[in-house]
Length: 307
Image 1 (cartoon, one colour):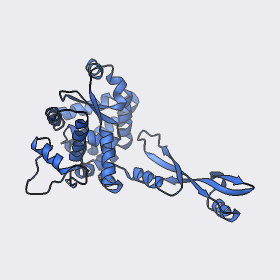
Image 2: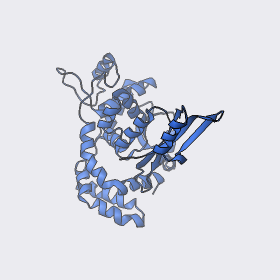
Image 3: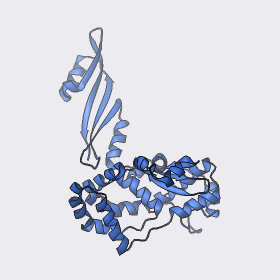
Image 4: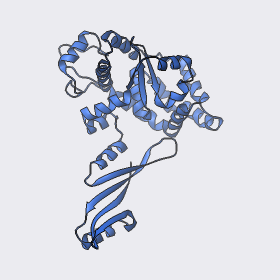
């Protein structure tokens, strides 16, 4: 088992039930048409041209105002990025056809998927994994898999927080890969050949980060690009006087953020103000600076548990 597969398995075993519970809601959110052309920061003239060239993932009713879901929006940003690299519209159309391909899920390959999950486990983890794949949550997750390749990648990034990229050559041939699998992939002849030839790498995480900027943090949280914990961290960064934010991560395999520590700085105008800070915060969490025997500046640490 590769390091990347091992990490993914740890995440599934640590939070498999939670992921299965979240899956239907996240799937619904990312596939709900809710964004206008302006919302995703693109030019209507360019988008109309792309539509005429057949580059949209799905057809739009010409009688209605165009609305895009999150996956559509990721694709639009991806086209924009591909054009910056002078990838032709013909090649982009080939890429689109690959991304909308949908794997068929039936009883035979469902069993095969379950077997893969178990085969990826070490002996120590296999009993826990077997319980998971035999659970109702896992069955529900499998029954609801109706995803095309792009949806699979977007869901993977959102649910497991993996780093995903697409490698694309000039002909529009596309290979998705996780960054944490790079060492393993380089051992495969097909991948070594791809990496040794000219190609473009498009980061899905970067595309989603761009959409956070376009849609705003609240909407990014609504469609689960940002988790509640990530929203708390971003909000903390915007507070007055914050210099640094430390994030404590759990070690149970889920890599969930458990606590943040804010270091804040502020000017001090007298010993009374300093006394107030010391009464409100443990003194060992305060660093002070003095000039001519007077306290003029302090840094203090504030610890917060995340949800």
